[in-house]
Figure (cartoon, rainbow, N blue to C red):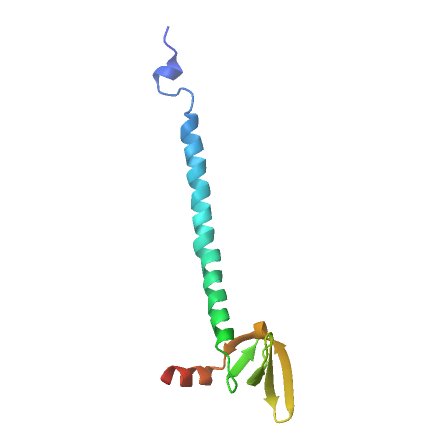
Length: 110
């Protein structure tokens, strides 16, 4: 006798197809994470590293704390900013996150 479920094509599911689907699903999830999270962070770290390496006296910068100042001294790991006439604050170089907007425009024009 012929089994009716087998004759209708409703036999046992193909285990290789299920494994292949799971592998493709995991690869897809990794690709999404890479393009939405990992790659943009790498680009941002590289941009920040270049900014820190290019710092020089007189640059007007913004720190991660939101303090705007002018670079007056650069050490190996620190940078000293002049934030007022008689006020100087020393920060870690990593605390500098951007050049001030008007200073960026002047740099691009040069």
